[in-house]
Length: 204
View 1 (cartoon, helix red, strand yellow):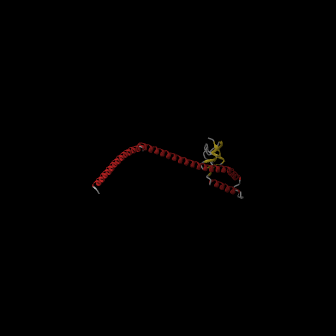
View 2: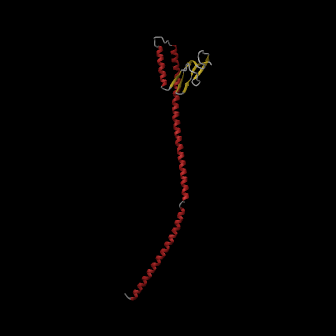
View 3: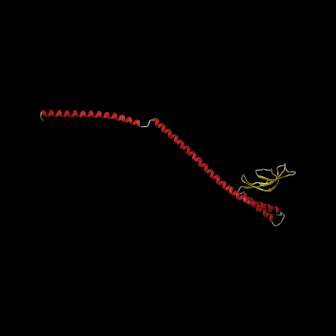
């Protein structure tokens, strides 16, 4: 290779290297500008993100909403429990009062048995009185199974909650306001009077 060609080649090589260096510097400047732009964009993106205060407000609102939902749930459960209890009570009362109506319709049968026992001759050998007495006992036992008790207040103090005074009479030897005669026995179901005893009371 000649000396001139060698020089030309070196010159070309230097020119290429210089051009590459210039391109590299331009590339670095562009990257710096892009980085600066990205930095600004990053700042812009950072501004787009919710701040700590905004997040705290959202959290507070979410907690309030959760608390309100919890209170609504508790109230709904309490109301449901009240409805269930009322339904059970209504069913129980319907059964009880339906039974009470049926038992009340049977009380005249008991009254007739007692009147028959009063008229029957205890000393008779035909067994009439014993039969009536046994029937009455079976009847009262059946009522007792339904929590129904007979009220026989002979000799007791008059109680307007359980007794109905038919009249008042002078009764020598009897305490004032005591029951001297039971005209018709009463009945109660648990603590509820289904028929008061009709009585005659001693005067004061």
